[in-house]
Structures are given as structure tokens and as C-alpha cells.
Image (cartoon, rainbow, N blue to C red; front, side, top):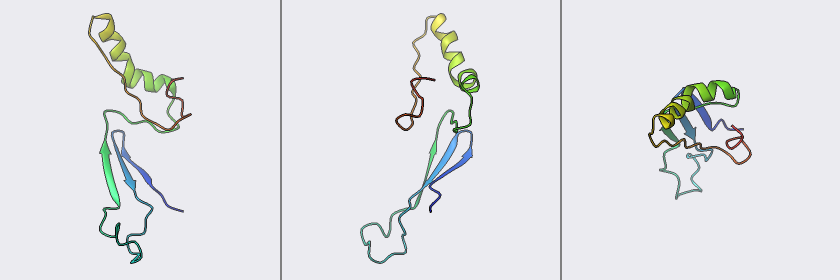
Length: 86
């Protein structure tokens, strides 16, 4: 079993490819980097409450909408993870 997702902090995530780079059978991927790091404005795990998520990332957007600004909240995650519900 591979650990492919590692949360560094509340804005950084590291993904590790489960492909064994030491294998000589997979010549196309042998030089490929195993780890990639991504940075986000906010990142929440499966234990985050909806109230915390709203207060941390969306509440300020609602205030800006009322003040007449255009805003966008882009949510990324697996299908069925609760993005639309949240």
C-alpha cells in the first residue's frame, strides 16, 4: 500500500506517484519525478467542518458580493466528496 497524499500544511500538499521508479521494466517512467508539490489558498481534509470551511474561505467572498465585487469560489475534489453540498 502506498501513501500518495501528504498534507504539508493548510496550503501545501505533496503527491507521490505509486510507480516504483527503481523498476528497470518501465523505461518510460524511470526518470520521472515521484513527488509533486501543489500550493493552494486553502486546503481542507476530510475532517474539516462545513462551518470552518465557510468561515475560512467563503465568508469574505459573500461580504465582497454585497459590496458589489465579482467573486469566484473554485472547489476541487473527487466526485461525491460534497463540493456542491458544502
